[in-house]
Image (cartoon, rainbow, N blue to C red):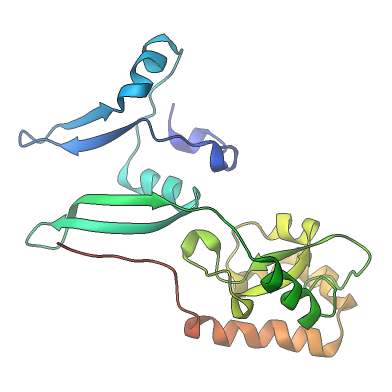
Length: 195
């Protein structure tokens, strides 16, 4: 079985790191399990997934990984030792309320004001999108779920958005379109450091 055979969305925050993979001088890769998981791994009925470099990038992108600290690189710039930290997706209540107020307590995608609201990251959380007002829009759970990990500019061309945005005021449509041009000015949350 390959990673592409699984529905990666089911991994989410359920992913647990059970070891570290090192490249040996002989060119082989070794999994060094964390001690507390050794017994569990021996007794569990686990299957091994063969994962390519691209598979790992896809998996890590969807696991709320926010920081990578590069410890060592080869002469040609390839990373061979890094620490990756997982952070929690926490948005301050004051930030959320400021976003709801700014957006008129309506979903910025479909215009509904009679449903519970969430906040959505214009620059995806998985890509370092910060939880700041400039990067957040109020949206209903349905729109948030349907957008998923679609890039913001692509989302504004998505079939679903083009159906529901008709309920928006001209100002709300304009604000959504203008946000695309401001995305590059919003700093990503990513720290990379070399020793």
